[in-house]
Amino acid sequence: MTDLILKIEKLHKSFGEKIILNDLNINITRNTSQVIIGGSGTGKSVLLKCILGLIEPDQGIISYNSTPLNRDTRKEINFYDEIGMLFQGAALFDSLTVWENITFAIKSKRKSDLREIALDKIHKVGLDSTVLDLYPSELSGGMQKRVALARAIAKDPQLLFFDEPTTGLDPIMADVINNLINEIIDEVGATAITITHDMESAKKIADKISMLYKGNIIWSGDPGEIESSNNPYVDQFINGRSEGPIKINIKD
Ligand SMILES: Nc1ncnc2c1ncn2[C@@H]1O[C@H](COP(=O)(O)OP(=O)(O)OP(=O)(O)O)[C@@H](O)[C@H]1O
Ligand SMILES: [Mg+2]
Image (tube, rainbow, N blue to C red):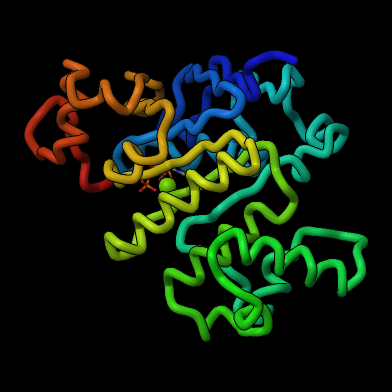
């Protein structure tokens, strides 16, 4: 089996006249934690949606374990059983209890087995059985994030996607979530792809950081290298400066 779990070649996506992804290439190595940074509107979510099959790219190849992904192959290889996704803002189902949320995507199992799985996952994210029958509205934001994490790992996925996992959390809870992500990656032995604006989080959870700008990856490196990248785009982004080569179009 190849070392690459995901290989993205010349991915192109436009909406009308607007080019979002412009021949984007990125390789994701198995068992690594890859973080993708980039400004608002640079296409991070579009990239994720292309990988997940929620958006059809115009051109390009996304291969998972050497299999080029399309609607048919995603089905053939049970792609959706191999991945876990933490949506931005937790995105739990309000009308389902915690255990029902966690096991939502697992089919053909008895209720008692599902509760057992939910209990196992809830322990992994540092909560206990007392939350299993609660509804999301009865949980704090940090607890909701943990439940969403538990849902993301419910099927013991090979590949995990985290979209802005620390957004909206206080710095301490953000750190708790960062630690949990690291533990989960280590324990499950999974590969993780995280999209974030939060540089503290990026440095803490990444084995590799890549920056998306104008439709392509303009820099990749180790978290320890990012401060001294000598790349003016990276410098501007990580230091949060409004002055620099990156021009913010506030209409975007
Ligand atoms: N379905 C769509 N139809 C038309 N335009 C879209 C669609 N989805 C995304 N876009 C456009 O693509 C661009 C990139 O959007 P995307 O959501 O990927 O940004 P992002 O990098 O995730 O930003 P943020 O950090 O704010 O979440 C935006 O200009 C957006 O308006
Ligand atoms: Mg986004």
